[in-house]
Image (cartoon, rainbow, N blue to C red):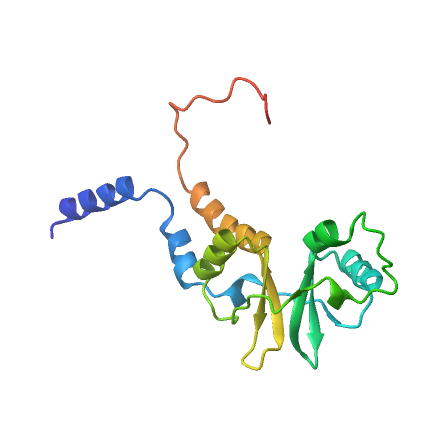
Length: 177
């Protein structure tokens, strides 16, 4: 193939499939272990709701994994606080988190790819997916926020390399911003 033909093919491919190829590659090839770096926040099933919520606030985390015999038994999230706890007159000091956790949550191994996790989150409505090892012990939690930030960094690098379009009109007002 001659050089001009190759350039034409690449131009046509860019027009038909706009967007960064690195982003597509990250979705298909990057592992969840590349996305998540901190260890999961964990408590035992017998831990009180009050202590669990205090721990989530202190650590600034939106979820906590519930353990039984060192293995994942459930997940408790900020959504659970809003939907199951708030305004219900529950004694937070005496009620164990196990009463209001989501038992046996969907899990993935840390070597699952980003695209699969993103697909499950979008189609199943998950905001957090625990990552577990072969023995069912939690190793991390991947959140929708983690995935968006991770992919956003890749996309931002690609966008920084696109020259500005002098014909594009800027917004005339900030209404709705």
